[in-house]
Image (cartoon, rainbow, N blue to C red):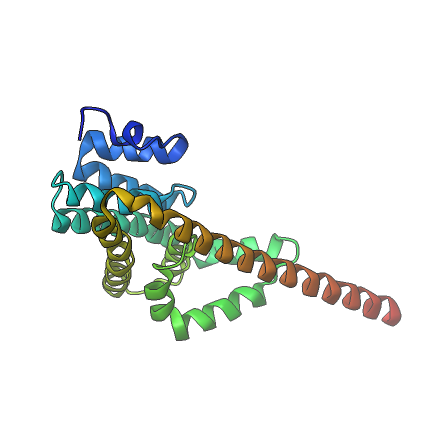
Length: 221
């Protein structure tokens, strides 16, 4: 490849271009940092960085093993930061937030805690493979004080699988690595749409419940 940066060579601009340029300038360190930032700031498009990193491994700029190690390390470090932020935030603060946030109840937190106690391991593992959730899932794991060793093991396994899919796809596709992006973008849009449906449904149900409670209270009065 010429002396042009990867972002310039492939006409990648915006936030994605910045991340790719970071990878180009700092090598595997940049790859790890870019993927780690994706955990802290979900809008950062790791689905572009990962296949391009695989492509560069195919061009022998990096080794495939090196790219897989760097991307997984970045994912795990980013997730660990969020885990400890959640742990520092703690349950008492979470109760305070739920108790004072419109449409939320402390009972919602308690139900979430019960669900996490039963399915937390699976949520952390599979959550690493879902856009947006791969960042968010680390927070409740910290708040609920999930065993950190178990959290690291599940996060590492889930991240390695997810990152490998995109890195190896970029490695196999070579110069056509960009073909991965539309599928990743579609998957992310589906996830976002599903989240919006759930949130809207929750708000509608909770508003109706509050109206019934007010009517019941007026009737008693």
